[in-house]
Amino acid sequence: MKATRDWFGAALTELGDSRDHVVVVNCDLGSATKTLAFRDRFPDRFFECGIAEANAIGVASGLAQEGLRPFVASFGHFLTGKYLEIFQSVGLNDAGVVLVGTHAGLAIGKDGPTQMGLRDLALMRTLPNMEILHPADGVETRAMLDYIASHGRPTYLRLCRQPQREVHAAGHRFVFGHPDVLRPGEDVAVVTMGGVVEVVLDSLDELAAHGIHPTVVNLSSLPADRAAVRVLGASHRGVLVIEDHYITGGLADEVGRILVESGRPPRFSAWGVPDYGQAGSPEDLYARYRLHVPAVTGLIRAFADTLDPRDHGA
Image 1: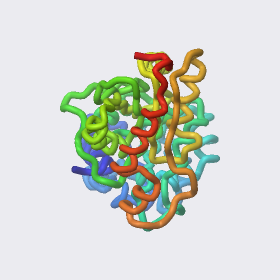
Image 2: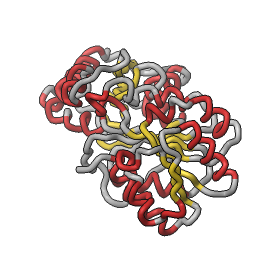
Image 3: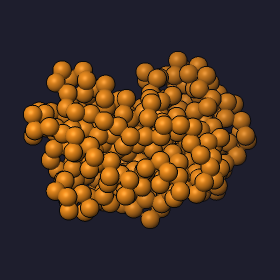
């Protein structure tokens, strides 16, 4: 098991071997963001800006305008905190910058809400030309890196600190925006991304003992494929979104809006972080915010109990 930030660091270095237009703009966090291996192999393609994310975003935007594919790496909380610079330099210019935000969600633990990436999705979703990707494991991380390097659009890559096991088979084909069904089921579709994916998967045995067999959906890239999400909604009586992010502005808002606009939505609910977050061990925080296996199992059971046989869907 590795964190997706570790898989990113290895895949980025491999990408540098085959694509010489890939460069890294660093913010004095190379050890944490796992970009040091790239620096060691390609020192002339590694630009250290220090603790200055705003400057790094400007430097990267200039490099992108010259035809390079720069990856700017920092904690997601710090990087997206420079929203004005991202808006002005990357978004408005349609600059092909890859913003790499690590330490997503609650797993940063004792460093607390001043460093906790909990509102990055909400910010990046406001930019109409920004693609957002949040892998669930190493296989998906590598597939996403190949996809990102194949085009020059503004991109936000969200990565986790906590170790995550592989949930995809080797050779998994990543399709941007498409709901990735990891376990087909019935009645309830549970939609999530990133580090919560394996938590939902680990709840399945207990749920099965209670006669609940949800469809597990990894919606790892946004904007979502609207037609595919509508199909998902039409084939289930209920859709539940669970995310390691503020309950406002993230995956729940994306999925909920699509379903409401479908005209005949299924029953819908969502769970996420309702406040600024706290400082504590990752284990304590995931328990406090009901994002560990026992709590997620309970959330899915409670939601399934609200479904009415008259609700539409399969």
